[in-house]
Image (cartoon, rainbow, N blue to C red; front, side):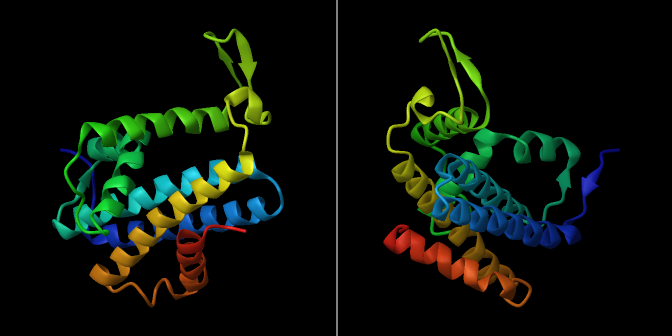
Length: 195
């Protein structure tokens, strides 16, 4: 007998994932405005992945499927999948996830690689030197503020897609009313960039 996340509990997971994505997004914006660009990028990446979790949960819920423990570990813990889902969700206007292409998979793998660069001190065997997320040049970033802004726009798009889909499909607008300001901020950043 396999252990499942019951179908009836998926909406709670959607709400918690969206709320956590909002937390990451708001913290990324705060850090950006306080000149902590590298940390802002990392939290923007977490927002992107947490938005992905919400979109994946919505797919399972809209298909009336429970999630097995094995599926949870295979799909919901995979950083490649969580980077893939928002790309496809954004491209499909937040509807069910579009078909996967090789370019989507390559971009997802690249995102995971960059996330590791922004998370861990590491040794670059190719360049024969240590890298650190506290030293932008060592991880190949010259315009830290520009990268941070770009990642926040990307995270804002993923958050916007997950929130709009949750509101449209599941009517959780009331449950997420406290997130309205974050939603407006995400949409503003997506439209205008960040100052």
